[in-house]
Length: 354
Image 1 (tube, one colour):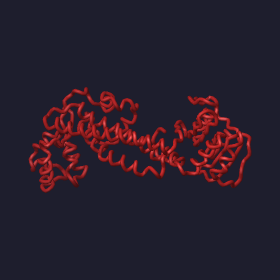
Image 2 (cartoon, rainbow, N blue to C red; image 1 turned 45 degrees about the horizontal axis):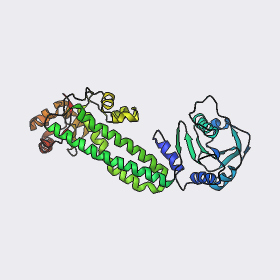
Image 3 (tube, one colour; image 1 turned 135 degrees about the vertical axis):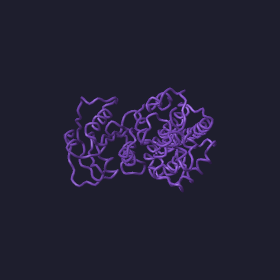
Image 4 (tube, rainbow, N blue to C red; image 1 turned 180 degrees about the vertical axis):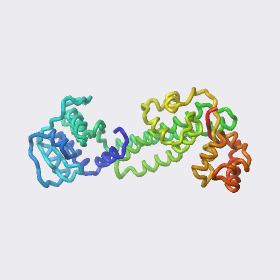
């Protein structure tokens, strides 16, 4: 289901195995009757409903919904799935709404979701039984826990491989920085792998929401593999970007606008972030090095970067020069010098355009 938003993940959780809505869908599939159910209320829903009969204070249960689905018409359930409001109704969505769905029931469900902004459950009764949930322009298929766990394991394996590649690209950037041989390709390589990891992580968030209570281990494994990745990529971009970004979030916004396939293209990543050619030589600003220093306020770090501009100038600065920067002072200058001396030549540095 796309996009991966808080609202969409909440909807997935409402249809997770063991929930009343999921149980209802499974009962309907088991009896082979099919169904078309709107989960929502309000004027937009009322204007697409005709015929049938309206119910008063009928509490929602999975069994009641399945029984009502044996009739030919559609069903209306309130937003919170607490009550069943109408049954055996006929839905009349705007036929001008474009849809790529095939089959009358799923085409109607897609149009209903787009027109009303409500969630719509469609269960097929012909051919291969399946249940689909539509919400706005998004949709997802209700899969079994076995299928979802298998998909989650595949994603976790991909995430593990990509994390290895990410760590390797960071180590390579460190080496090239220390030798003065870093290029845009090396910096973008780190950011690119972080973007792919972030994308896989989002897929796992979606799967975890679909699985429900049994997904805690999957979420924990994913969090471990994603740990620190976004932060390192953000520091690398601040170091190397020709635009001197002030906020890391701006990088992710640009990358989120790319097509999924573009995340696997270093050229597309570089273009989106405003980098020059991939083979352009770069030197670090020093952001990653300063990020290693504990209890260094962002305002002081930024002032240091503005004062010295490049990592080379930073590591060659004297204690007195460091102390002159606003917010540093003699004591903090000594601490900064100590940490920079440890990192000098070790490869733990970061960057800016040359």
